[in-house]
Image 1 (cartoon, rainbow, N blue to C red):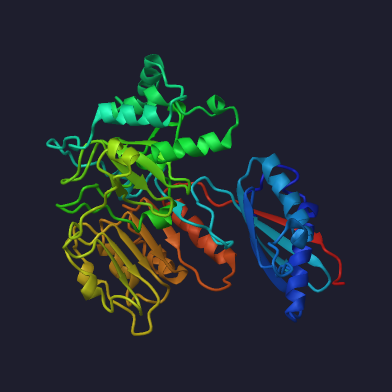
Image 2 (tube, rainbow, N blue to C red):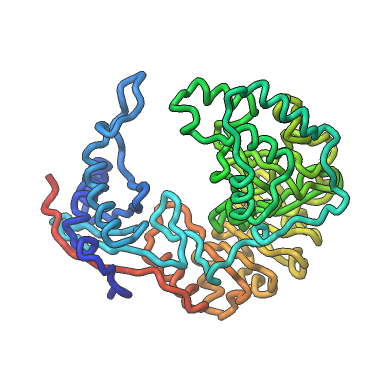
Amino acid sequence: MADQGLSDASMNDFATWAPVLRLLRAERARRSAAGSVRVTGRIGRGGWSLALTRRMPPPGRAAQVEDMQEEHDAVKRVQEALADAGVDDVSFTAEIRPTGRTVLQLLGPSPAVEPGIGTPHPGALILVDGAVPEPWRRLPEPAPGAAPAPSADLELLERTLRERLPHAIGATEEEIAAAEARLGVTLPDELKVLYRVKRARWEDLSGDHDAARNECEAVGCELFDLDGLYVADAASRRCRWEFAAMEAVVTGPGARVQGLVGSPGWIAFGDNGGGDRLAVDLTPGPRGHKGQIIMLSHEENVGAELVADSLTDLVLGRLGSEPRGCGQRRPPAVARVNVASLRSVEAAAHPGLEVLSIGVWDEAPLSLAPVLGLPRLRTLTAYPGTLADPLEIAALTGLEYLELGPQEWRVLLDAGTVPRGLSAAAIRTHGDQDPLPIVAVANEILDLWDRPRIVRTVLEGDLGPRA
């Protein structure tokens, strides 16, 4: 029996899904599957994950849509139904009999569940509406003694920019004031000088790409216009719970940049051409300068890299970096116990531990006793079968994120000892596990917080006999 059904008629129409199911059945037939087969997958409006073998393109040519046209057309039909229903992502599982009779179960959506990655299993369960992991709640430490770098030279900066960009159109004081009002911050003087010389509007270049490239070289980055300026706070650096919960904010006493997710004092003004953002840092680390230039990598979730001590230095090509030896000299806040890293929970335990991850393990299951009572432990993830006694988790009262295998969750649910201080949770799976039992466990966890369940919709139809 379905929990409830998706409202849009096209989503409830078996014919919408039939082409995808036929492709998956044919794939299983190529693998010599006999009798009834179970197929699974996930389709979203921006992508999909299906166990299909794609034709390799000819040597020297990249894959084209034509190489997977049948798959593309079948998925597009479902994606159009998703768009009509206002649904972003749905996973599914189907039991297909040799006769073609099929029971299809659609799993999703729920506003309290992140989609899985490359799997029909659910991602993180958001147990508290709007909750974010601790690193995303961390604000910068005050730096009352921070001052601009001696290299910050407004006159030199303006003279250099005007020499390099003699025909540039600058922003008016009214436009700069409007940007400050929108952002809710006062722009630093060096940044104001930059925009007084160059307002960075594409229309000013009349489509001249060479001129745009020259201006990037003159400034040292792809400059945003005033409307593109933004505060690179933690909310601007979005990250899935399952990854964000594994991060930690650490700023050493000699650091020039605070190891934050984001800061209300990071004003992003440009791009390095590869997706990494440059920002003026008004909340530097203990050894940093107010107004230094930092870069936020698009491949990292936490922290930023020092680029230059000032905007003047950036424009003049005088780049800097963190001095060696400024990093942390204390046990790591994030510890990983597995066959290739730490070999015991004891080795990971210390008062500053925030995140404990137990991965692939080839010895006897582990006890959590060494980390019981640690004051800052907020994240625990454990690969299925690695815990000697899952009930020990009940004593970890400070957890905000917990990721376990389905069997370990079953132990906690049956004992009524799921930690109620959690903000999010996840079910760790491996291999080709049937998603239906995983969804059932997920819904039990969601029920404890009275959160929206994962919708389950059952459709039946006939794909016809195999060709």
